[in-house]
Length: 335
Image (spheres, rainbow, N blue to C red):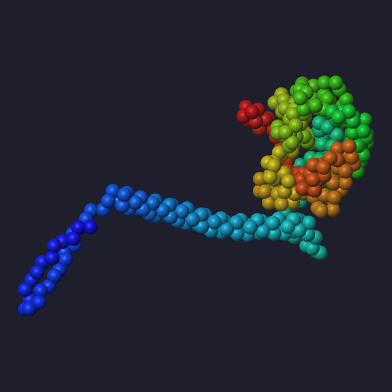
């Protein structure tokens, strides 16, 4: 340390001594440490700033998420209440009033006395078309079932044949009105190609012999996406295009819905009424009849079909679309 020399000033008989400090530049080591501390402080401040922004964004997102979930819960609750009330009104029978009948129609199908239902496998008639069969039988319409295979994919053809007869009888279909085709070229196999001409010949033969006024089958997506289901639609479409469907016979196809709607049971009711032109809605008691008929296909009662029986809309709701030549032309071109 270097000291400054004292300065002496006269002040009466006394002298005053004052030291003047000199500014000494810091050493290189001290300067380096100060710079390091400054840089660390700046980095900490930047990190705190980034963390604060992230925390603010997270808090805001969490707040909006809570609000959205609350609103979504309220919407779902309101929709559920609407479905239950609508379903109750649908089957309400007030004494001396037709309120429950004209407010919403439980079914909207073309009138007919003889209907032909065409399926691919035993259990299709209940799993997908159960509500339609019950409604037609309630109207005293005679229902004929044409099943194009005996469902021998798992080597249970004989068992499934009997299950088909038992299930149809429980729904009111006469045993003599059931036709099951056991042909080598129409086997229960998703990988097998069912020829359109073969199916069309079977359909045409049945329509002419039965004088059916209504033909009901799958649409082009086959409800479950099974190729055998879709093959029946394309055979039916070919008959429509060629004009070979009798003029007094209307064709209805069962609408395929998305996976969410498929397992909504009665909660798909408002959507069905808004979007469909032909529909059948069963009461809770009639729904149990369809479920019991499905259980008669005991060889098919694996765990996921048990869940299907409980949750599927096809156990309680059928929505169908009437097709004609122009509709078929548009769908085939679109495909």
